[in-house]
Amino acid sequence: MHAMTIKAPGGPEALAWTEVPDEEPGPGEVLVAVAATAVNRADLMQRQGFYPPPPGASVYPGLEASGRIVKLGAGVAGWAVGDEVCALLAGGGYAEYVRVPVGQLLPVPEGVGLVEAAALPEVVTTVWSNVFMVAHLRPGESFLVHGGSSGIGTMAIQLARAVGARIFTTAGTEEKLARCRELGADVAVNYREEDFAARIAQETDGAGVDVILDNMGAKYLARNIGALAVNGRLVIIGLQGGVKAEINLNELLTKRAALAATSLRGRPLSEKSAIVAAVREHVWPLIAAGRVRPIVDRVLPVIEAAEAHRVVEASTHVGKVVLTVGG
Image (cartoon, rainbow, N blue to C red; front, top):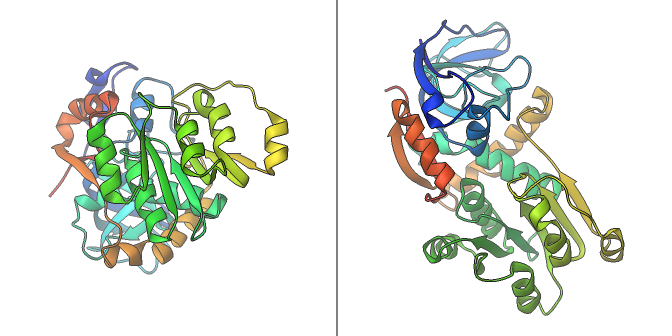
């Protein structure tokens, strides 16, 4: 089989489509012939040498994929050769075949094409686990997601809209802000021109928002805490704005607020399986009903993965960049 290898840590040119040893499913796994995968910022970090795969995971990049099951490992029940699936991965999506634990498999949802489905697993599991399983966003509450035009952002806006939350978001261009509003954002703030915390204070009469999903980390920490409502919940899932910052603990105490920081890739199979099961139960019906959909910016062949990485690094896209692999 072929897979996208990383010759040495570096720029997009480090990616090389290479013949590699075939994969075989182990007990409790299936082998999937990959139709498509999608680009995540974690892939860029892995290519640069900053985010190695967890022990036992595939060394090839790619945290999600869609395709067809071609072989079942020992003890697998409930799935059959030929099933069209999408999957959350710890690695290996940029390849012709990938081994997947059955707990991380999802059927391709009704109304979504096989290639398009590759854009779902990582963003849906990330948003559902953090916004709903950790922060417990409820109908009628207010919600802020940073980077609203990203893959995570476009999904978070849609799911928050589906539960009846008031949605705030940030983005860096008027075009991206417009797309966020189309998806359901009530207030969209250009972070290059305006202080999001001040705008939230204005829009909420100083009350703040109940839940914040943050990908920036240190750079936004103080303003995020300032923008929280009493009993608010801040969940940090990325560190694009740095790793160290001071916290005003008195402000957290006064607001009775909660701060959580999570990652998904390195979690044990049991936790990932629980998240995937919750997504199948709660999100897949919304997709089938047309209330939530994957937002795909563009589709490129996997041999153009370097170009796809350049697009994501430049942040010129809205939603996900998908790579096709097989037929």
